[in-house]
Length: 231
Image 1 (cartoon, one colour):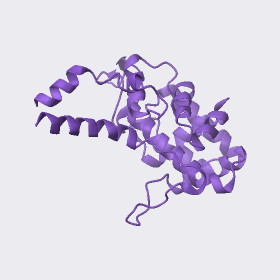
Image 2 (cartoon, rainbow, N blue to C red; image 1 turned 90 degrees about the vertical axis):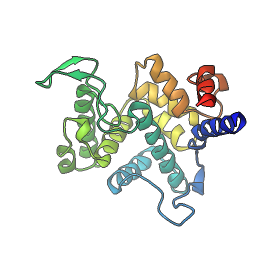
Image 3 (tube, rainbow, N blue to C red; image 1 turned 90 degrees about the horizontal axis):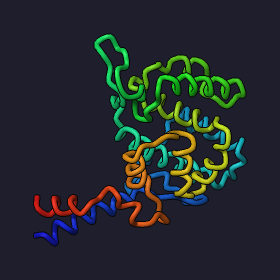
């Protein structure tokens, strides 16, 4: 029985790496084995990414893979930040809605109040350049990230990421399948002051195949294994 449980435990750990797929060229799967469409960004974000890929000079033959890698990375960021929970909030508030402790970070991507304003301004700037989401869509995004739809959350994340100085290099790396670039871009442009708990989550939920096993397994102690076998 202990060996069976150990096998299940290791199988669960293997699953952490199984979701970290990267794709090259025209190899990105756009449908599931059953012929159903694979999860992907909504139509507005796909159109936005297409314009960004024009700007970045991404070859048309590489775009399916590029988009798939960007989507997979965005899901990893969601999981690291909030376990993909829109209601997640880092701070505590009083009965009047005033922040009493922690930060104002909220939503699936954990945008703070200040970063919401910054991202919205970046969206508006891109829109003026003909590479945005449209003013009506932008103005319809709430100041509260917990109220965002998936479409709005992805739009804010992508717009905020793409507009930052130096992000083009990392975005190209992510799109072309560089797993390490996912962590690099996350730390440079999304969560610039991570605590140790966040770093452990990144090592687990955004692991890459070249990452030392010791780093990837930091959050799994011998006690975790012992508890699993004894339950």
